[in-house]
Amino acid sequence: MGFCLPVCKILRRGKYFVLLFLSLSLLAWIATFSGETVKSIQLSSATTQSLIRADSLTDKFKSWTATPEDLNTPPPKHECPQESPLLKGAVKLSFESSLKLKDVETENKGVTEGECEPVDCKARQSVAILIPHRNRERHLLYLLHHLHPFLQRQQLHYAIYVIQQAGDVTFNRAKLLNVGYLEALKDFSWECFIFHDVDLVPENDHNLYVCDNQPKHLVVGRNVTGYKLRYKGYFGGVTAMTKNQFLQVNGFSNTYWGWGGEDDDLRIRVEIQKMKIVRPPADVARYTMVFHKRDSGNEINKDRMRLLGRTPQVWRKDGLNSCSYKTLSVERLPLYVNVTVDIGKPQS
Ligand code: UDH
Ligand code: MN
Image (cartoon, rainbow, N blue to C red; front, top):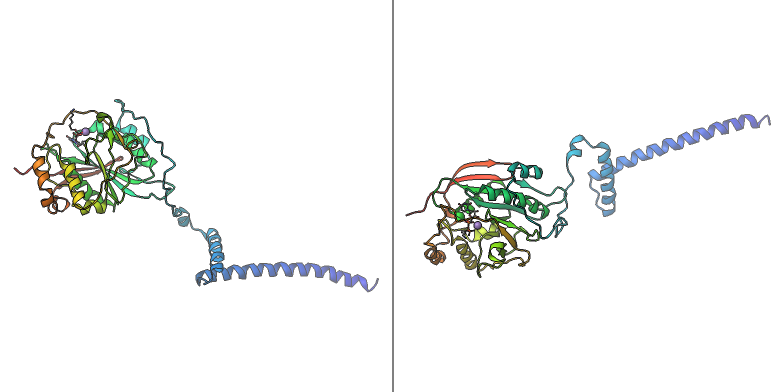
């Protein structure tokens, strides 16, 4: 007993020392291990296994040491699905006479200067919508009201450009669309362009506002023509062409003043390039045209047949490469970019 007491005391104290020693070793080991990991990340270790380990540990390490700036950087987005889950199909359109521009702005808070993109995925295409315009404010309002939510449901990155013809000389739809193409490309390298009449409102959001590997005609039917194609080869109203397809045909002709012919001229250019016009199914490519009469300043172009006859000879030098105009203003309004332009007058 006399011998055991001091020995037992030492042993009991020793237990605490051992525990203390073990804890300190464990801490030291953790410190060395994380130090090695950081080193292995910097040296970018060669084996896949250690890369995976390094990656996950780097993330952990970063999350411990994240600065406020890092936290503000959004993670990279995944590409949006092939078919948007937001599509509704045929929707009932409304044309309320009480609708105001302010209402449409309030409904579209996610749109800035006419531009919008999906929040939680990366859009499959960046599309510029070009609307030739003069004196059709009510139609423009109805179109904006329907088109913004329509394009957002399609999960596109898009912007709407309205190209206003200044003055009151004869209207030239085609030249305005050439201007729209050239001006929109100053903002962003849009890969797809939709040439869009102001009075045609799409009825079904499965009519996708994206470009295909061939020029696309989106208006198979409209209410006023019993939803039938106006005639074989009709390529007017709303069309979609990629940046390169449009460049390849040298855009629209600049020489069609007044109503008619410019859309057939574009079809001829497309055919000369051996491209083939495609259309969505008829049950989807349906539009409501807001009722209107013929505008003054857009009388039937009596010269259109003669012009169409010379397209194969002149298309190379009449188009995007010869489109001269004077931009009077570019206003970045909440729901669209308003480009006002002096496009000159017909040559007598
Ligand atoms: N446009 C304007 N302002 C004009 C003329 C034309 O903004 O003064 C634009 C607008 O985008 C319009 C497009 O050019 O949608 C085509 O012109 P349009 O709508 O007059 O052509 P559409 O073929 O009508 O629809 C032609 C005359 C309709 C007569 C109807 C009689 N029943
Ligand atoms: Mn019309």
